[in-house]
Length: 513
Image (cartoon, rainbow, N blue to C red; front, side):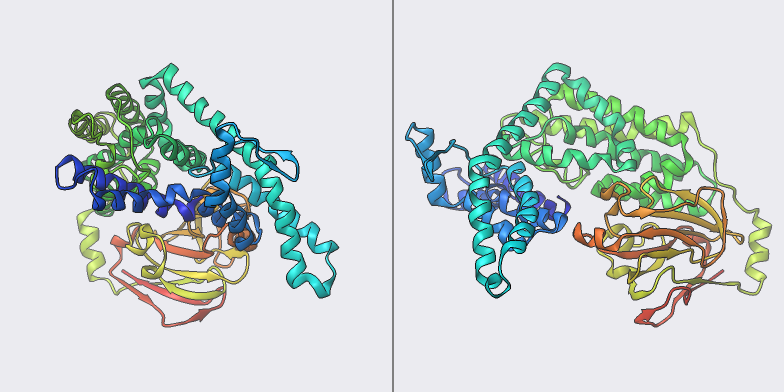
């Protein structure tokens, strides 16, 4: 689902913009500008089966264009016209088989299931098609087999399943009310850590497509996201460790302003442990308030200061005040709780030792490439957490093989549950994060094998992870292996050696005190 999320967020935010312009009187709801602007925003949802087919085909390994052709049938004007006639009582058949009236626009599940089946249909047809006729007979047979299955069986069943899931979510929300929002808000940071939060994505997209808003998961994220910002501000205020203060301030601004919480979650809350308690408590309280206020989101952009407008309800101007209240509550409560609960500060060197360090001859530490491949600067990585050096300075290598080795000698200090990221600290205190792939947490550990554990002593060149690159590429994800010095503030100079290609174990970055 991840590759299509920008289209969904962009479309929903444009629809929200049209609503705000109409609320302020700048546009008329009957005017052409308003309606065209709203249509621009609605296009991603109307043609959702096509977008899903493209994304799912990369995940399942089926032919993207054949998947789009099947999804295109579902939203073709002529087919939709016949479905409308069936809804009015007209008997509609295909090859003498009666058809159920189904509206496929704004749906997800039929396209996902059909694209998955398409892979097996392709393999079967490929086996029975003579070689000399494959270029024209194979695609024709695939469409002749897949299209009827899609419109007679998978499509109707998928819509019914999607409706059942949506009704299930509505049922839980209706029965538990604000408590459902509060529970999700408390659990959200823990769900993000394990990657389980991704399972909510299809439901959120489908709910917004069906009703225009989502009122359980998205409102809960306000408190969850901004609480991590408040936690980070409190840590920045209280810590005596200069590097931690800089990390916490950067993480706080990222979480509060843009809703990007990974730096605060991994760089502060998980790292110091007790601040996570403050975040969980705040997520519950803020979620409860958001639920009681009836807040609902028109988009699925990560809640933050800049995206808070997605919770404004045109028919209820008080939602503006409630959004502000929940945001302020999230930051203030998590800030105070962190100060009250406290945390074990990271050790800081004595001032006289800092003076000695300044007088010492500069020490250079060489970091070697963990894998062979093409070298990238961090600014070229398609993830702002790394490209903007939120976690620190470093480099990336587009992996050409699946064996990832340690870039330094040291002790394993972190092994993420999904095995896609490993933390290593050298004997001299250099803290390195090896992050394999972009957004690979969504794979939930599939394709990653690692036998190392926290506390292990490892050496440069020690294999730390085995990766199935084909699986990552099939999921439509980048195979960049990123190496970041997470305590970059403690070092004066970083020299990335000028290389286009690098071999495993070859020096690529020099770090100097």
